[in-house]
Image (cartoon, rainbow, N blue to C red; front, side, top):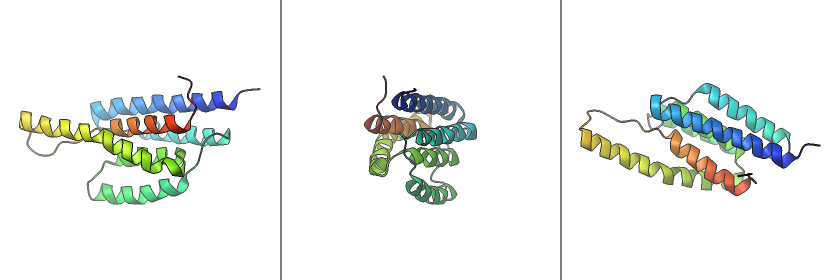
Length: 151
């Protein structure tokens, strides 16, 4: 018989790999692929099907509505909204605020670097942030608190 914790850890590590790929594409191209988001969603469903994952539709749905408003006000990118929405499905309700706090805390250095870059290079117009990096870091740190990872 296959150990459920091993399956859970394998799925979680695969989600982390997908997140690292999304970090690369977000830094290089400022794109978070829909394929990565769909793969993470499928992995979240599989994790739940094997009994050790959570499906938090309420937090995910609330954030999707708020995220769409943020997107239309040009406060956040669509890829970031999609990524956070799909990751919130896997996070238990008690850890959602921790995830947001850690993601925000990790996003601060990105914002400072962007401000310094704009100031030093004297760039005209706006600069976008690869916020997928902060989202990935926030998820990895949060998931360490509620999964038993084999690292």
